[in-house]
Image (cartoon, rainbow, N blue to C red; front, side, top):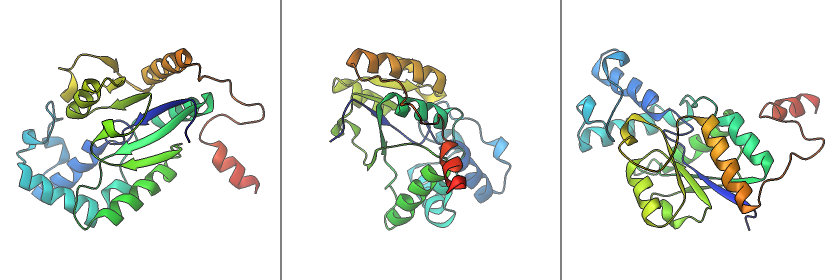
Length: 215
């Protein structure tokens, strides 16, 4: 049973740079340079000329054949901020909708967990689902407009992780992980869930590597 303050954390567009990784797949498929594909300013990939069928085909290629989810670059600040929040007593719950490709679930799940381990992302549990309001958390952080609107409509506290395609939405917004930390620390303190770091515990993600080196 989770105790304290539970933070529901989205991955793509929040912790992992999905658009950057997917842009390379799309560019290679078309035989063009990634730089020719503009940064999406609306949800989806219409700016790249992709319809639903195009997206489904290329996403399947990316996840099942190219194993993109294992190799996405992390978004700056995500790892260390989540470590500091976790050390503060925040329960990190990863919530992601990555089971999009039929017959590709094994690759999506294993590559997601491997990516989290590779980038030292701390978490207590992980949920693969699309309807995020079904998951109990004290606050959520997400970038997808439809998820943000659904969470807010359900009376949830949602932090909008700033991206060009969600700037038309009003609400609690963080322009980067430094602002996420400030907002979550404030919310958790109101909940009475903040605690100082325990004595003798090294700060930061690198402590895992240090401990392994000492073993």
